[in-house]
Image (cartoon, rainbow, N blue to C red; front, side, top):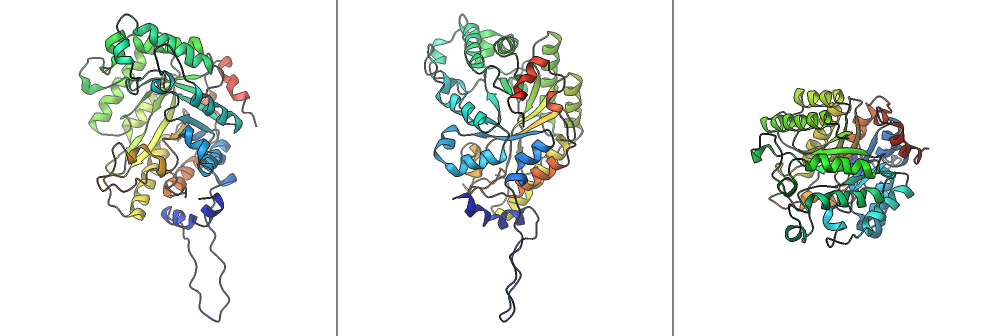
Length: 398
């Protein structure tokens, strides 16, 4: 569907956002009424424009192949995002077909797309327990794992040094359920390298790239339930240990995979943000979406509930200046991972992102934009960084 056709379909999205959209009834013999004003969402009315005006980064994870083959999808990303991250382009299984070789095609295309459109780029991810290449289980061992990790980070982060906004250096390192006193996940990296793998990864990343924000990325720390409380405590303890040992960590990524039912945001989340500020860390919302699998199938109802979760969460998070980026994991429901993993039992398409499967804005888009508009203009994403690591901003000066 072309963008000119989308403008004719935004009435549905505006209705989902609580806007009065539609045509007055026409009585024959009288002059035909003018069409109701449709909610604007492109150009100056885009999320990108509103976020940029407030010194905030806002964007999405992208499918690099889709950017090349789907003109409307690429156009939507260009219009709405001032920061992007590859869904899979920089994960180990995409970059390392063999233990001795790299394939940078998709990653290079991601960077080229961003730079051509004056976007920042997040790198995801230098170290994770999932999506390791097939050769890893057979060829990685206690003797070579530390060197494999350090060499990989040097090669990958070094290739894009000076061109990245941030790296998820270590992703999902904490799993309280695994039962370790330190809360760390029982991952292949922990078993092969030991708990020092996290520190080693961050030092290697800083040696490779002096400018990018180095981020510890985690999920499950957003709610007020007992599991979120325990996860926050474990992440905080890990970050305090890292800071005490002068590990070069700059930010924490709060993934923000949220639920349409039963999600509460309150004092625990607020306290976590304040603790991050005390540690001198930025907070990045890195993978936001709202899973509607527990809601009934009615699209209008789902859109309303999902939009309200976006609104409540972002209103709570964006009031703090050290929350410096909002990234959704995808931009249209047509490409969300939730239609595969964690999908609805009735197999209906999830309505979890700011644009629906036809790239029409839904209530979540307007809720996001409203929350961004409440943000006091700030240059918070540069605060506290050494001058050398501010140079990336100059590449995108307007």
